[in-house]
Image (cartoon, rainbow, N blue to C red; front, side, top):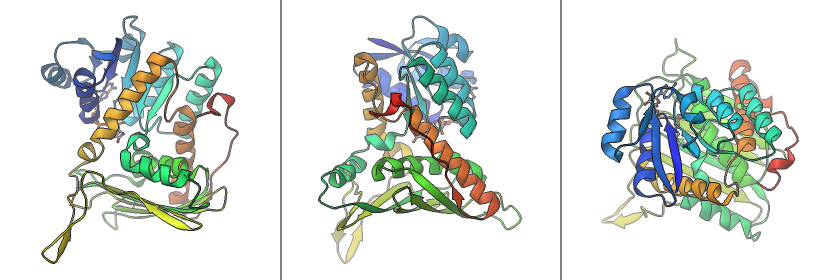
Length: 335
Ligand SMILES: NC(=O)c1ccc[n+]([C@@H]2O[C@H](COP(=O)([O-])OP(=O)(O)OC[C@H]3O[C@@H](n4cnc5c(N)ncnc54)[C@H](O)[C@@H]3O)[C@@H](O)[C@H]2O)c1
């Protein structure tokens, strides 16, 4: 039975805590840490008693804990992951791995230097059934080469008017990873346009439209809607030489009745990807138990931030930007 400690017990940390305490085999919720005592109280009331910490470093170094799950705000991730790697502790870090390319590179270098994969990044769409079915359809080879990736990620209303840079590193980063994963290729050029909330606040982002080109020459397009007002949706489509695949929604089929066609839309990301989060954390626990790294790792976390940096540069310049390519370290060759 692995003892897991969670850092950050907000919306995401709470969901992971519930899964660990109620649903995941082979592990238990052994400790939690949050800077807000009310969040600690809320999790222990919901999930039962466990050890609590007020300092993340102390928790990471605790010998009784076998692995760490990071679900604190984005800007805290890089330092916490580096601490886990230097302590030799397996870690599942929520996306994004860091908020800058430089910090992500430092993590990649630190893990590569250990010669051992300790890190999994929370790109949970790799564990979503509809994404997996799309990938399976592509992998048969019957559809020919992949020519174009298209995704649309739609969120319900947000309280805050997010800056475009944050929409890139916090939201679009999911789509950058999905694009690389489903196309089996690296993004080598990016062009970002966005529509602000107000004309006098051009740094805010209501809508973002991203054009991609892959190393093979294939094309890509990503639409992010920060405030659609009706729910959470992620649509993905891949066009190939002799076909096209779209993700469906296995839980909510399209219903046609009385001259109408309808389908339920999930209210938030929690409902849409709940099953994927459970599969993700179960796979992570299994990967630690069997010492077999699984899923997106430091290389994927790093590459998504290289793409993000070029995207932010494109916002600044208003022009397409080349995405620098680097050689994948041997440690990640099989992943
Ligand atoms: N994979 C996904 O689909 C997905 C979805 C949502 C959020 N996330 C990621 O999960 C992380 C948490 O997001 P959230 O929506 O739960 O946010 P949240 O604001 O609900 O929760 C964050 C929690 O971290 C705590 N916190 C703040 N500073 C801290 C620190 N220095 N050390 C420890 N705890 C600290 C806060 O008190 C809060 O309880 C973010 O990185 C976010 O990008 C991923």
